[in-house]
Length: 98
Figure 1: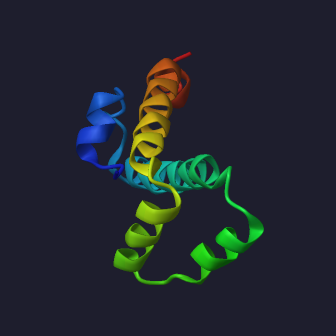
Figure 2: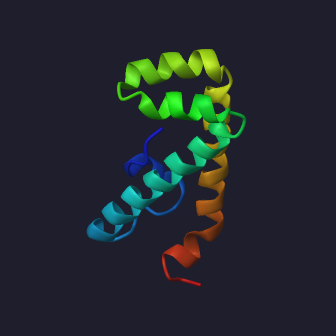
């Protein structure tokens, strides 16, 4: 899941100035990655966390998650949707309109 122009339009932030929007998109994507990681990894053992941290290939990581966190796609979707709703609720504050 990416934070892109379409995402920004969906949450009502498409009218941001281009440079501001780019910075926001980067920050939002980093925040989303952290939230997904926390949600997916919440039940991992320390050994599993270390194992996952050692994986550098995305294909390998996806296979590892299929085995060790079979619900990671659903969790990712839930986190993504919740994040999206938070941004929609806060869009006026984000745009400085509140």
